[in-house]
Image (cartoon, rainbow, N blue to C red; front, top):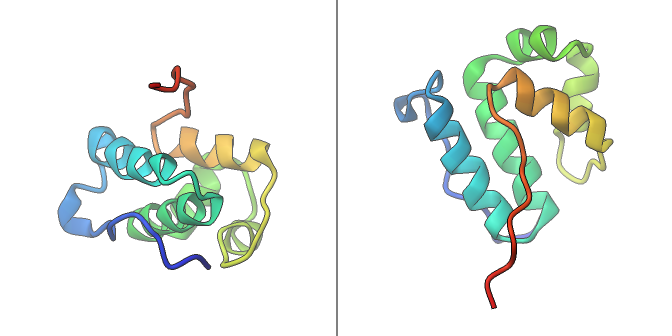
Length: 97
């Protein structure tokens, strides 16, 4: 995994706060590195509980572990389902120039 990563998400960051989750994922998205985003998602999912998120996302827990593991290349559909289960969505914004 790339050495660049978003700051670590911890339970003290209000794991049920959609705003805290969104801020953490936005930081990862801003890096432009898909491995950083995957790591950030994994941080949040582990904090919320892998089984709970898998159930809410409608995916198997084992599949979720694999999808969020280092070097994985999950389908975008999986990322969308996980984000929705966390109470956030990914959106596009114009690049600043």
